[in-house]
Length: 292
Image (tube, rainbow, N blue to C red; front, side):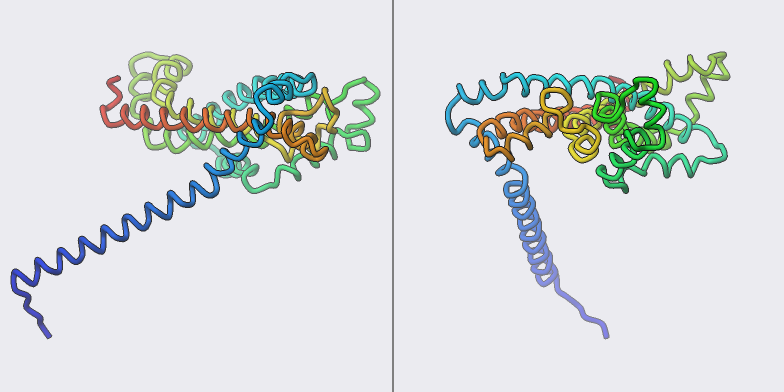
């Protein structure tokens, strides 16, 4: 059965389809904005409102308190150690996976994805099982006066574990999409392996690398579960910012807890802005063929 529509009928159908498409588009946008407002913006706003509820002086006093300063210093130190380690691992692993074929490649990819599927609390318990006083290596560590659990090394290990996929997972698909033509051309022109990496591979992935580092750093500073297990919650010594905020909240010191939490909220906002800038810059470079 064939149905013939006149030109006017066709135009009416098109206008109706456009109205439906516009309604769907605005509905989806309204739903997305409502979701962001309810689950992201309002909680962030609430953090700052609670932190400043008694004025700026209690807010500053909570941040300048010795235990808070110790938590801030420890958080920055852990990030300063774990992020560079993840940069090295992420770049090397992604380079090997994207540019070479070798036995065990699939297994390496599985290991990289492991922290995404394992609870951070479980990873912390694994380190306690290995390096704790009653763990497999505990007696040997105690005899040699080496402390990992309830100390900085344990916190760094736990942070490295939960954050090491971020850099690699940003670089692997990027390197795979770029192929190996440029590296092969550089080698044919006489460059060695390191020269090819520094002059060809690394410049081509610099924006993806920065993006991965940004996400890795944000997760390192905000990690709670794994660090909570291995830190021991020693106030003024092994508490990071999230752990210190939890202790203050459990003590019903809400203003101080939200004041400390506002530091992480500010970090989240800075990360969001930097993420948007990197996405724009990376997209602009791709659209211009990497000429800038």
